[in-house]
Image (cartoon, rainbow, N blue to C red; front, side):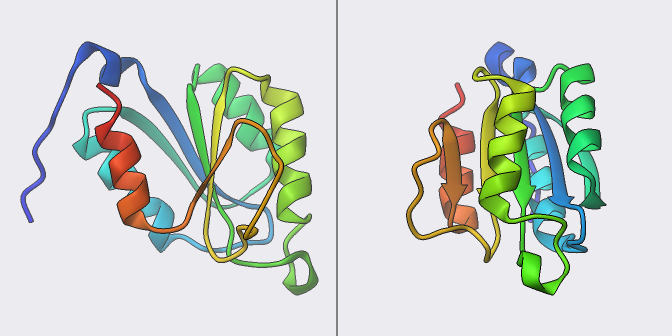
Amino acid sequence: AVFRLKESKKRRSVRWVLAAPEGDHYEIGILLAHLLIRNEGCTSLYLGPHTPLTDLCETALRFSATHILIASTVPKSSGASQDLLTLVSSARKSLGSQMKIFVAGNQIPSASNLNQTHFISNFQVFRNYLKELK
């Protein structure tokens, strides 16, 4: 597939940080998301797997990120440093209410009451969101 760079002023101002939480070595999905983001003309910083929450939050703030994507595939019982909803809640406290937080992977809950958190069930949902950034 040929990727086309679709830039607009708004898309260039959208800045993503992507990572998997500490204890989670998942990588393929966030790499694909990184490519989709870049294809839509947005800026992104790929931190990769096994990223401590403090590093993710500090980097997002220093990078002036507008969005973060956390991909989680490992529950706390299998090695993740903390429960996904606890992690997202802690990230929200550190990053403030303006940061858009996206969560993907097989650890996303079927229902959640976390305000301003977007749960991405598949790549098509994510692509649709990216296309709406005009």
